[in-house]
Amino acid sequence: MTNTITPSFIDIIRSNMYNTLFHPNNPISTPKGFKKIIETIENGSSILDVGCGDGLYYTDASICQLIKDKKLIIKGIDIDDGAIAICNERIKMSNMENQITAQSIDLLLIKEKYDVVLFMESFPVIPINDMKTYTSHSLHISPKIFMYHNLINEKYISSRALNIKRWIKPLIQYITLVDFGKITTTNEMWEFINKTVPNSKCSINILLSSTVAEALRLPKLCALGPLSYECDQYLIKIIRSNN
Image (cartoon, rainbow, N blue to C red; front, side):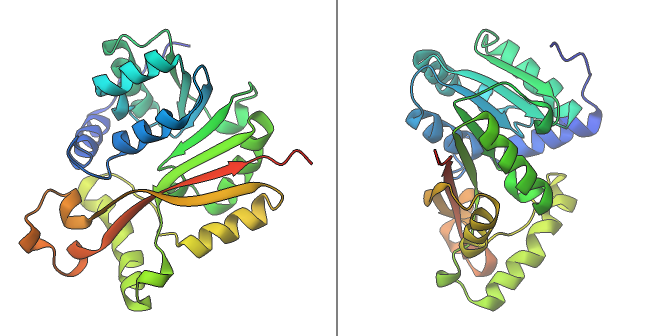
């Protein structure tokens, strides 16, 4: 289905801001995470990318070439019409229309089968009860779920610092127009999985890591206070049980 919606001025500003934040030199950028993930996915696989947003990864020629080389078929979905409009433009500009499509649609309306359902930075911005439903539905249409997003390991942070992060993260939206969602700890992630898909096989591992200062390309001397906090981007893999 061709998306004919024209992105609004706010959509364009938000997209440009996201592009600025997750520039190619950002060590924990979404495109870097996306590339590392698809490098591990079997050639010829079909991928449902849930919450694909404006498809920033498709502005990276190396990612598009990797998708071509691995013969991947990707469908990106998002409920944000404006973001999907931008995503479709980027797919077209990258000449990837034979392998990548994007549609504004709710995940629960997707009935086709996929080899992998991928949530790139989607978990933090989806209400937890909805995420439980989406996770269960994903395992009906695919044997594998991959989730890529930030987690906080309680072993390496004080409760005070964790509470500061919980307070700060939602406020970023008012500065950048980009919603980064809620803070989730590794223990909370395990609890979510054990309650939602208790019979599945799961792994949770760091995929990318940097300090806040490094992600913002600030000098090392600026890495003080909250700017010194580690930003660990995790890959969560959930494999459907055959039982």
